[in-house]
Image (cartoon, rainbow, N blue to C red; front, side, top):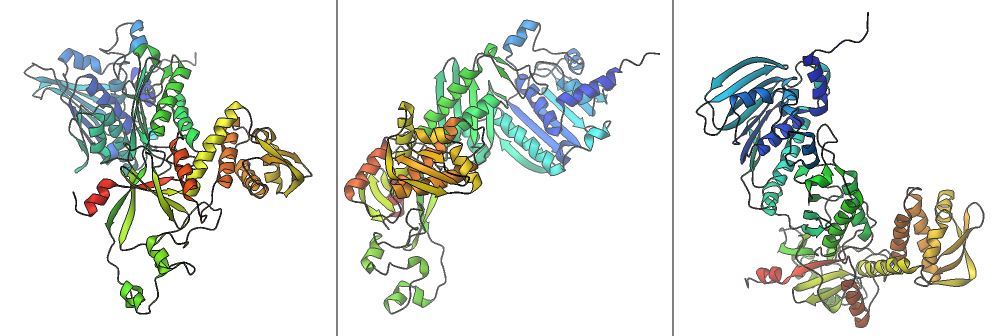
Length: 601
């Protein structure tokens, strides 16, 4: 007797459902996409127990005639394609005719639909893929789909579902993505008796973004058209100091996708400006001719294949780089400081009568009281060469960093002086700027180094007496393994034993002492870099470390001409809001904020 048998249609459907229906969020995605394809303008999604007990999607789309409703639950029945040529230019979200029969095969399923213009609707009940009942019912125009007890007949699949809270979170994420893609459609998501999301139809993507995330001035606009592609959306500014990992929503022709080409272009665009590792927040919309992208490569339609992959990568990368170069400067906001209870000796009257300043107001012992009040004394700050700073004096008001202002660019600035020989205080026609002199100079030098590298190598200076550096074995290997890249930057090194490196030339940009410190820092940096990393990654790390050690330090007094030079050079850089390590270059106190606090507006 033969070993091969034909599976029943019910079992075949249940197996096939595993490719389409992974969890309750998959059900929500398929049903909402069907509703959008049907012309719905308002959608109501309800889930119970994270969707495991029930998922219900109610839409006001065109609805279905009785015969269409019956066909809709049969496998490979669809109204969206007719012949194989249609697969080359798919314009709808759904097209295979698999979603409804797959869902119905692993649940207690109810479809209720009434076509526009008809006086009644049709209700079909399906249990585990078998039609249980069909009847004419009273119904509103549109379609309601109920999916109850998901995977009730597949306990092996059901036990792999996450907790109710985790599944609810996935449903919320999917609905958020679809709401972003279709701002003209109203979305309501409820879980049990709680409203999770409510977005009426919006006039623009920015309006929908506000509905979902609130005011987001930290995101900057992306707009570019090239090579037949149109890129729009919002991305995190370089100077944004929020989480290093943010949500990334990428849409191709309004279809949410995960694509390695686009993901690489996003990371590449940010790494051009900074070596700081991050997965930035991105809401990116890519429009292209439907024939230029194949969406029929994944059961859940989550992946796509581009006809010209390199073109897509380059246009996305350029679009993001252009936007990041125009990104704004983080703003400061003045607000009254929270009332504090402190000893009388710590108050200003107490100090004048012989008390002691609290530590955060402590004036420099070598400066005078006038220096402390004017803000140009040499108090606080970091150890020289660290490039960082401590909290400065606070005179009754609190300065709070806000998110980036995507509309502001760096304008010509006039330096007024230094604060603690670490920050340049400058003004322009829009307000007051506070610039970290070390970070700003580091940005300038980094871009100068990277530009010179495109023409060849940096100038170097030979040492009369070679420099010998004792290193740990890992650090030794990290430097000698990147000898070629170091040579391009002006370092000439060679191994001088198992734990020693001999340096015979250093970049003209650095003096001998800084070169020694920079090489040790580079050894640590490169030791943590993947050995298979691209040469460009290594060069950027080396250039960033060099720029950091060559830049002016904190606690270093600058003449007016030097301050002016740094500010002018900063304006000429491509990415002036952060240093190559990702720290903010400046903070801005706008004219409007100042006038508001003086009650002039």
